[in-house]
Image (tube, rainbow, N blue to C red; front, side, top):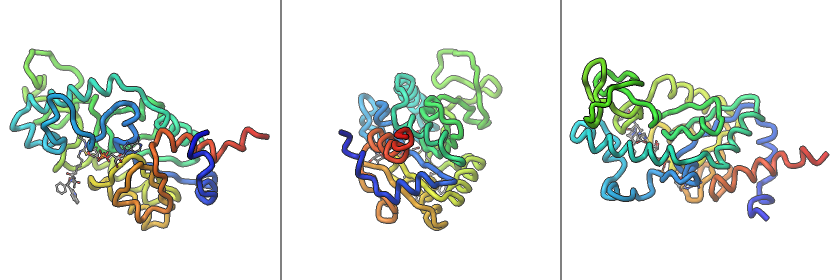
Length: 254
Ligand code: BV8
């Protein structure tokens, strides 16, 4: 018997069934059950001595491009071994069921898209894409000269992962779409995020300010917890499938 099945407040289930415009913000917690470590999880192996936010900056890359490139190569390998989990799949079903649905992610692992989510807004880029550090434009093909990081075939500058580093601005179109979805939704889910990194962390508060019902799914409290209408304290892979079952289980009863 799934511990969550019968413990969802009726007004949350009603709000979900009646929702017209839903926005979801995800963080690395939703990929934890796929074996992708969260940002807060201690790094392992030779990366244990580094704090992620010390490696994920343009300054760190300029100081030691090989170190940062290798870190992302390690993470890309982890992500390539990972599979979307039932929480990712539950969001695919939610997108299918709801008239208007926006999935805003801070994750660079691409697992939402691999699960089948269509309308994904990537705020912080994607680790499987590469771009030129100098020209800041995507690069798909380059000759592997054995040098790490490899060189841009156009300008000879270093190649880097197509992710947003700390101190760098987010892709304007993605941020605009995320703000618009957060400000126009009637139901907002914040799933698997510590709600500490800005401007992503401001999105649930944008939704609150516009009168949306805000639901947090996280085993631990965050700066959003005190303001959320509903806090579902558990793992996304347990809570999300149970919530969908509770909301729409009667459907097949007839
Ligand atoms: C910018 C890509 C203009 C790279 C990332 C305002 C106030 C304070 C600071 C700032 C501010 N505005 C700007 C800043 C500076 C900075 C910032 O926010 N710093 C923080 C640390 C205070 N922001 C920026 O630099 C942004 N750029 O603002 O540009 C500017 C520039 C300079 C100055 C002013 C303005 C760029 C931010 C993006 C950086 N890039 N990622 C990469 O991945 O390598 S951020 C990266 O870290 C992730 O993408 C994500 O956003 C963040 C980690 O957060 P989470 O995903 O939430 O993960 P975390 O590990 O923290 O938490 C996991 C959660 O899951 C936990 O709560 C846990 O309980 C939960 N969990 C665990 N298991 C489960 C679970 N939940 C559910 N189910 C489970 N099974």
